[in-house]
Structures are given as structure tokens and as C-alpha cells.
Length: 150
Image 1 (spheres, one colour):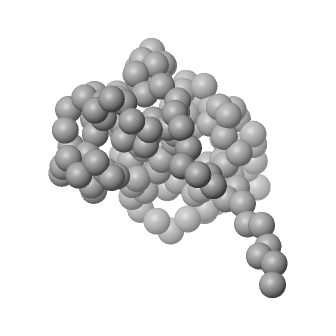
Image 2 (cartoon, one colour):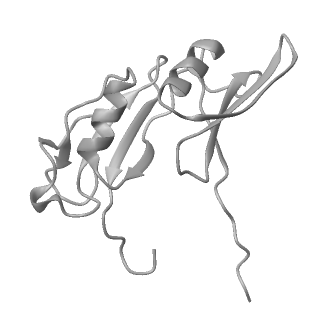
């Protein structure tokens, strides 16, 4: 039996101040796709990171999740240092590059973080982190060579 394609299109990000979040993500260079307000109780804002096929949505009446409760939202880049520099130049507070002590993936929070990119900058091993104004946590992961089948 064939498996139907399922593509991740949208991730809901819980925010407290829609206009502040919109300004933050637009300052990062993310494309504004939509901003619709049907009433004071319902507003949808959609933005897409450069090069991504998946967007984020936030607004009013969108989710019951607490603002700032999204953690581990992940973007991939081909050059972790260049991506970090760009985010900083656009006003984001970004961590230094780090890799995980175990070398597989990052631990929750800051546990297991080792300062600096992964040894030999091996693909999938280097990260930086930043948060939006509500504290929703983002990670950038450097991928230069994809694993087979990816």
C-alpha cells in the first residue's frame, strides 16, 4: 500500500503581543504571507522563513498554548556562523555556536552544550539558539551534507 505524502506546512507559535511578534519575525527577514483579522477575538498572521516550505502562524484566538511555550523549533542552515551573524545584524539575541557533548543531537535546555561548532564542522552537529520576544525557543542546525535518503 502506498503512503500518502504529508508535508509539514504550518507550525503554530503562541505569542502574547501579535504586533510585536510580527515585527520581530519580519525584522529577521521572514516573508509576511498573511495578516487577517476577522474580529478583535480572531487574527491570523503567517510568516515564512527564507527558503522554507513551512510557515509559522500566530495571532489572537489561534491556540490555547501559553505564550512562549514553544521550544525546540528548528531551522537548518548551511553555514552556522554566517546565519548567526545575519540574525544578530537583524536584531536577534543569538547564542554562540555550540555542539552537544554526545555528538548526536542537542539536549533540552543548555545541558550538554559544548562551546564552539562541532569538531571538523561535521554536518548536523553545530547549533545556535535564539528566542522571540515571548521566549519561544528556536535552534539553527548546520547541515552541509544530508544523510542518505534525506
